[in-house]
Length: 429
Ligand code: ASP
Image: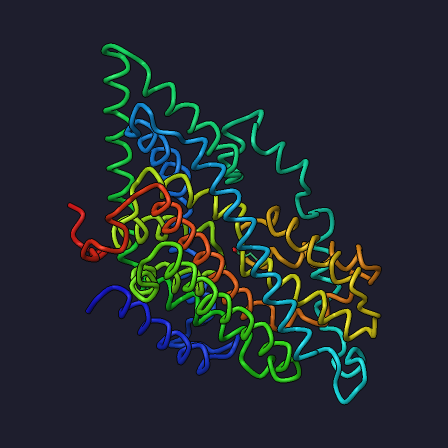
């Protein structure tokens, strides 16, 4: 069975297992929920373990292999423009859908009292407190970390990307034996880390089973009911962005088949969905984009790590829909200016949001503050957060991968989505 079929099956089985389990269920005396958690966590930890060595060596090796007159500055500028533009499009899609459906008003009344705040609101606020979404100056600061190891330890990828770009650039120009040796060493490390990554990816079905089973056990689908309209609004907007807007870009700008790219990315998308973390999914996205979509290592190793850090279409869209929903539910007057402020804040905060589960909540409280609503209002949407987090994370990863395809095509790469798709679980040894 192909890997993505295995992962899909694991998701279904995980869902069924989760539905049949409650938080206290035991099997042969062993509690099941901690067992699901352990399986999921081991998989995520393994992926995170390779993120730092993988992105640094991938970027350096990409830099070593670029041609003499290759203009990387141009690729960088195009990447930033693409990411900003698609995040903005995503937010606007969300804005239109939430204004059409108006999920925050039920039978003509603002829905606040009907819905009530979730029990865990205080707890959630405490965990958010002091975290603040990175603002623009903070992002600039992260570009030059004073301590590289600390940046690596905190998986602050921006600093690592910048350092690796410098390192690769100067390593490429280093003449003589030391340069040659070091280039071969870095290439060697990269190849080894890739093989480790492939072994981890083989365990994706198991990891995904654990992640989904644990989520379904904890959340259950009943939680969604009172918020069904909000839930549907978010899903609809995410689906429009993922299945209509982005495919149109692939079709008309990259002149390739969006369907083919979707197939190529399935393993990464399913993992993003199950883990709700685009940072942890990065090793898989890189493998899928290079091996299955045929994007060069030079483009993928630059565009994807940057994308996983700063480009979050799903998150940006979600922030906008959630903030407007809450405002509707509180009966706030949503003038054009307020909506514009929400769009702008969503765009800026989506860049600073960390690529980990539930990270958007921080950004949403920031937006609520800007439009004059109390932070507790976040309690309205806590129940559905995990399920929607899974969906928006898949859209985040999809957005980055579409970026890689488009940018590769704009750099004249002909192989993209043309070469036969390779399986990720091919024997690495
Ligand atoms: N979980 C999302 C991600 O990792 C971020 C968020 O929207 O909370 O991409």
